[in-house]
Image 1 (tube, rainbow, N blue to C red):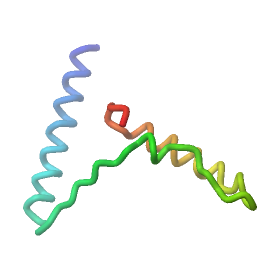
Image 2 (image 1 turned 180 degrees about the vertical axis):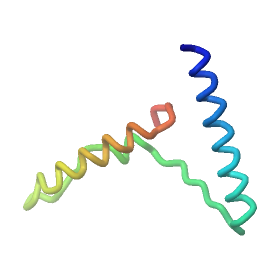
Image 3 (image 1 turned 45 degrees about the vertical axis):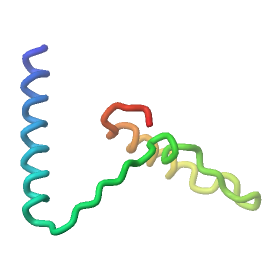
Image 4 (image 1 turned 120 degrees about the horizontal axis):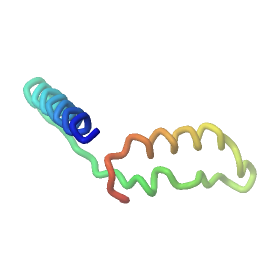
Length: 74
């Protein structure tokens, strides 16, 4: 099991290296944004006249964001 994990980790690292190299070679300017995952996934606060609008969409978005984050509890 550990061998497969190491192989997958190496594969992901190589893929990230290829992608970042490609971006660096083809783009003039690259901006990196430090997003606060906790703030993005926070419950949607609507106005008093529409308090629970789009709850299903927001919960799906939160699930997607939290499943893709790379550790860290920002």
